[in-house]
Image 1 (spheres, rainbow, N blue to C red):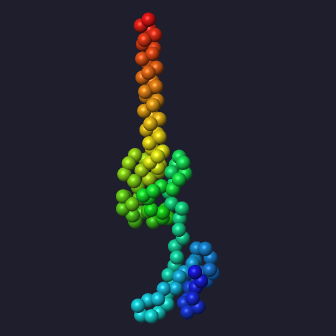
Image 2 (cartoon, one colour):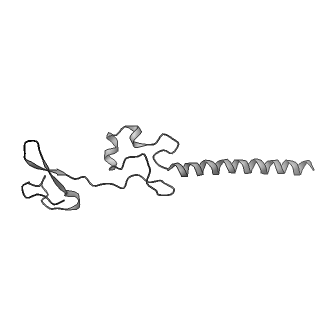
Image 3 (cartoon, helix red, strand yellow):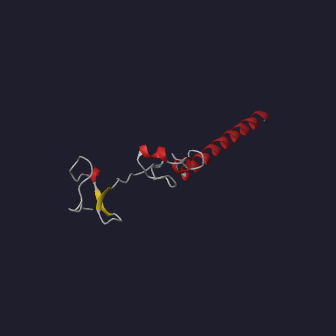
Length: 114
C-alpha cells in the first residue's frame, strides 16, 4: 500500500523497497502513523516431498525463538521437519522391510529342513 503523504517514513531508509513497506494507521488521537509491514515467509517445508508443513507457523528464522515449543513443531516423530504422509510411508516401508527379512529367513529354514 502506498505511503500517505501525511506520514513520515520510519527509520533512516527513505526508499519504498520490498523490505521497507509501511501502512498508514490512524491512532485513537487522530494522528496517522506508519506501521512497518513485515514480509510473509514461505515457512517450513517437508524434507521429503517439499510440501508446506501444516501446524507450524510461517515466520522468519529469528522469530521462532519467541514461540512456544508447541507452535514451532508438531507432536510426533519427525514433527516440524517431515509431513505426516511421509512419516507414514517411512513407517510402512520399515515394517515391510522387516516382514520381508522374516519371510526370507523362514524360507531359508524350510529349504534347509528339506
